[in-house]
Image (cartoon, rainbow, N blue to C red; front, side):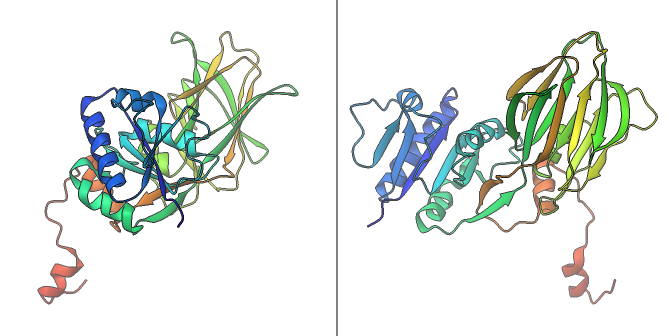
Length: 311
């Protein structure tokens, strides 16, 4: 019989997350699944190295934590889920988030849905949805400074508050515009409800394959949010004349210093992020629920049909 493993990650700095994580460990192991934990998180949960039996595995390696796991279960908010995506990016293990945060756009389940979530994991009734990611490369002259990826966004920002950042933006090998600005955000449809949204960019349905480009406080007439093809290459050049440096942020978690003359290239990621889904709810319903949108007065097609109305 094939051993079924689930990697469990939790925001162990919160008491509620520790309690929920322990409850999931107990229920999943009782159902015959093996739960793998990072050793440091197991310690926070009160599980010592000597305790695990055949149903609990501990690992010291974050980079290899999801190996042979069918699912990564995350207890926390969107930040915890983004961390989980970092750890599972190479393996492609699906990620299922249980929300303990505020908005929790990346999470699929709420903490009050624990019973149905466990049932879906045990019975393998969840679906897996591939989401577009970003591959990001930073080049200075002929030297590649770094290569990384992003699920939500890659943003080039000024490093010093008192100075603007001078950049030239290029799309598909052609210069688009020069801006003195606070920065530029490149976002995925998944990230369109995150920094992109706060910066005035459009909300893009996850099924749409596209890249968003949003200047931040740009001093220019042409400085509107743009949506480009998923095959496009976006390049942001930090002009050599800048008196200060810039900084690249990926998902608000990883940073790279950008000296004057650095070039940031952003393209569609080779490896999508894989999100486990329990519900078939439309993205419009998710927006209404997560943002608390007012839909009072909506009649809907179903009600019109009941009343015998027409369009």
